[in-house]
Image 1 (spheres, protein in one colour):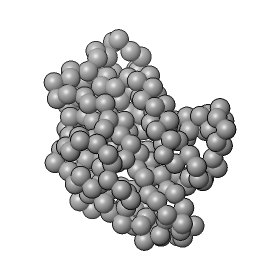
Image 2: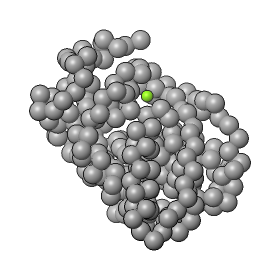
Image 3: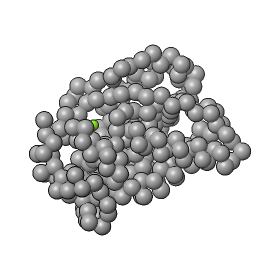
Image 4: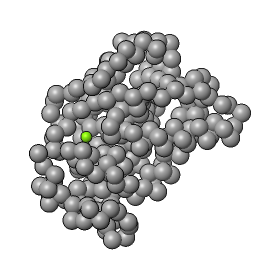
Length: 225
Ligand code: HPA
Ligand code: MG
């Protein structure tokens, strides 16, 4: 990230979900029947994610809307957020006099087993990103915890000499983190709980859930490896 985000120290800039937020009862929403018993609550409903994403798209357009953008989607968890964010940026761009060309590329990272970070970050299928040289790059990531993954990724991307790197993160966990690695655009700041859905997984399950939910103890047991 080229410049520090302008926000008060210790805050992420996203919608703050407090530690005591119990979420919504599951029965108030629809969710796939195959996950019955595997979830504790709906933490962030899909509609709220979409509304927040629309606003992030506007902020991104205001900052980056004068040049081409290369979007770098961090797979697998970032795919839904990336699709929805790019969609919103495109529709803002269509409805204004600033139509910006966007290219979308994908990079795949893996560091979690069960609900634990393995310290062992893999950039899978890492390709030559030399086309990023001199470009405005928007990294789109679903979730940022300590910032370690982001630090590694930023170093990796910086080596290809883009003109500017900005990061959009849908979720930032409230854990001690490296402030330099906080995203420039944050959807929600959440407590340190393991969440699934909206492409976030637990051992590859729950990506097919549209809301962001908290996984239950029995859900963790059922899908543990
Ligand atoms: N859920 C899914 N994947 C994750 C999480 C989480 O809470 N934190 C880091 N990767
Ligand atoms: Mg994962």
